[in-house]
Image (cartoon, rainbow over all chains, first blue to last red; front, side):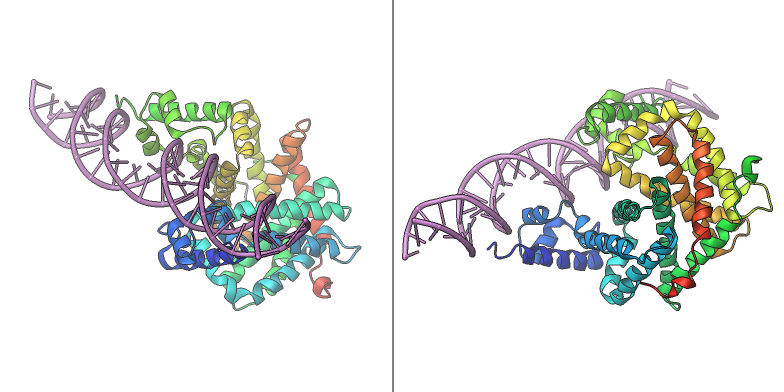
Length: 196
Length: 196
DNA sequence: CGCATAATGTCAGTGACTGGCACAACGTGA
DNA sequence: TCACGTTGTGCCAGTCACTGACATTATGCG
C-alpha cells in the first residue's frame, strides 16, 4: 500500500528514534526499525541512505532557516553581528522545541557514529552560512573565517547550555560572543613573530 | 610469520593508501588491502578497528604534539596567543611533510566517509587543546571557547593554504588570527539585543 | 630443546546496504 | 469504466564490513 510514502517515512523516523533510545543505536537493526514501522527493511533504505541519516532529516530545513536568517539580518552590521543575530533566532527555536528534540540529542551524544554524522552536517551548515555571508557582500576569505569561528562560538554556547541549563541558551550565546571578543582583543599576531 | 606486528601494520597502511588512491575508498575491499600487504583480512581488523581508521594512525601523535606545544608555550600570554604559537609550530611540521601527506589529503577530501572520521578526530583534538589550556590556568569556559574558535581559524587557514599555496601556511595562519581579531572588534552583543 | 606468548590464519556468522524484478495502489485520460 | 503510466513497496539474492571462536605458527627465553 504505497499510500503516501511520506507516512511510511515518518513512521520509520519515529520507530528508529524509539528503538535507538530503548536498545541503543548499535543494538538496533534496520530490520527491527522497519518491522516496528510496519514496512519492509528494503523500504527503510529507500527512504534513508543509511541507519544514521534517519535522525538528520530536519537538518536541511535548519540549514535553510539559518541561511535565511543570515540573509535577512539587518543591513549595515559586521559579519559577527549578523551571525549572532541569526544564531539567536535559531537558538529560540531550539529552546522551544527542546522537549521534542532532547531524546534525539541523547541518542546522538551516546553514539560515536551519530556524532560523526552530526559533525558532517555541521560542516555543510558552515559552508552554507559562509555562502550566505558572501551573498551579503562579505569578502570571500572573511566569510569563511567568520562562519567557522562564529559557528564554533555557537557550538560552545549550546554545550555550555546543556551543562548549565539554569541560564538561557540566549544568555550563553551572548556571553560566548562577548568572551570571543575579549579573547581576540589580546591576540597580537605581530608580536607572536617571536615565537617560542 | 608474526615477525614484528608493527611491520604488517605499516604494510597495511601503505597498501590501503595506495588502493584508496588507485580505485577509490569505496571500491576497495578490506580483503584487497590485506592481500596487497601479504596478510589475512582478519589481521587487518586486528590492527585497525575499521577501514577508515587505517588513515588516521598519526592523529594521536599530532594531538599529543599540539597539546605539548600549548603547554610549553611561553608564559604570560593570552589563550589566542598561546594557540597561535602552537598552531604555527604544528603548521611548520605540516608544510615540511607535505609531499608525504598530500596523497592522504586527496583521498580524504574525495571520500565523505573519511571526512566524517576526520571531523571526529578534530573534535578530540579540540577537547585535548582545551584541556591543555585549562592546565595553563585558563578558565573552564574560556578554554573551551578559545580551543573551538582557535581551531576554526586554524582550519580556515589550512583551507586557504590549499586553495592558495603561493603564500605560506604560516602567512595564512597569521592573517586568519588578525582577521578574527578585526571581526571580533566589530561585534557588540549589547547592541544586538534589539535583534531583527 | 621445551614452553609461554604474541601475532596470525581459518571459518562461520551477523548485519548494513544494493540491484533487480514483480506487484499493488494510486492518478489520469479516453 | 477501463487501460495505462507512475510511484511506492515486497521479495530475493548477493556483496562486503566487521566479529567471535578456535587452531596454528613464529619468537624469545630458560
